[in-house]
Amino acid sequence: MSWRVITIWVLALAVVLTAFGVVISRQKAREAYKELVRLEIVRDELEVEWGRLQLELGAQSTLARVETKARKELGMTMPAMGDAVMVLP
Image 1 (cartoon, helix red, strand yellow):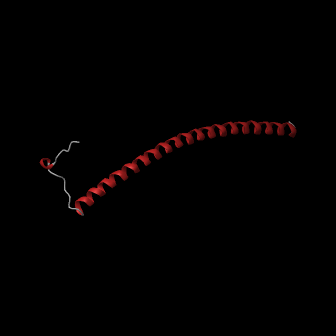
Image 2: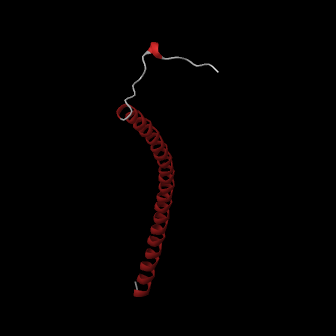
Image 3: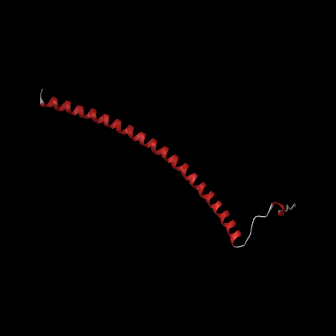
């Protein structure tokens, strides 16, 4: 075989291998994008959960702070069951 025929075969093989590489590369890119979208959805769900937990923490810490201040600074206590009076409008 002449060097031209060998060169053509080598170039043809390179083209085929490059085409396979492009196909594999695009498939991996699609899979990576799909995973990115899935992780963005998970991130958004976690951000919503984080916000809810922050609100809950704020509410609980505020109520606990008020109760602590009422007990320590004002000397307040919970009334006994017999001491409670219901006021009707």
